[in-house]
Image (tube, rainbow, N blue to C red):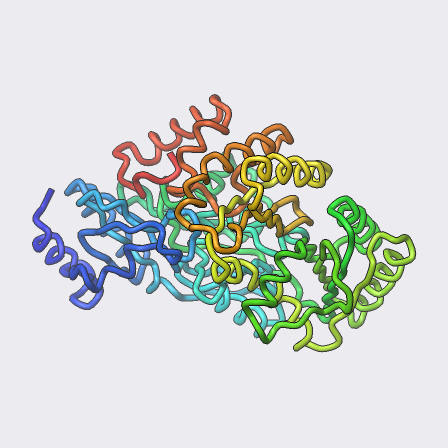
Length: 470
């Protein structure tokens, strides 16, 4: 391996003086994940501005035995975008690949580079009276490349699918610097294997996504957000069935929140307000959207009224303004931050078939509280697509380290029930470093073997984002 100073000098010859960071202090923020759980070190941070420059860096790294850690907004939750600190890693920041190359309202598609933020793409789409539906709490800094690498989901997956369903084509730099030019904006293309699919959700371990052709949708002309209280997850599931059956594609969001979650947000975000007069065991925040004026309002009001008549929900309120809608959304989006403010928590990102969710919540809560009686279960999230963030909050005043020391025992209970329900221990956050050891336990052996073969084919030297996923 080449000397550090020589590597930095070589890279500056390729990218220019200001686009290579070699100082450890200046690299520090790139070497830690945003939650501060994973820290590493790197030889340098490189910041190419084009696909050809990415390819040049990859070729240089291959020639000198260096590994590459692709990094977008570094907002991931599983430690997938930070180096291990093996002494031979380059962080390849895609921040300067931040151009929207084209937008086509006739085909409802856009070609965008990997470093563009979700918020920037959403704004550009809106300027053309179109919608890019992927929405995350971190969308101001989360990038398209990162969303593709983790196959991100979010709050609108129920209606539009996760990132995989939004990708039409990809431009990818392979381990040897060759480039897949796959940015066709086609809805139908059966010309052989769909190669782009292997890169979506691969967390930069098979190739480096530099640009993507993505789907757009008509901008909704009417949108209504509602916040409802009910007794149980069983009734929440009935409510979901009613809402889907009565509105079809108009239902875009269906989020489940327990009372504890709402209490934490109200406590740690004093500007927040409880939307309902009475306290309820569970809450659902749902949103209807339509390309027709006022249609979402009409359909939503009918569904809420029917749900109350059938005693599925106990109460419900509609957002009467954009500000009130934003206030409802803040209750949901501030929940993870409220957990952090409250203290230590043990987190899971799971998905199970919808019919299993009520039984899963009951069984997991029972078994976990039998081990830790004072623990506070906090399952919440995207009930509409079967994805729950099944978190557990420490007891008030509990020692954080002692609480977190029991994480593996809690993980085992949760994942056992998820497996019995034919679900997944990783729904939308990815594997990264956090769940790498879980993959070999919960993934079936044949699928795992195929994954290893794909890794060997696309990254025979093991230099692309080492130590992640496999």
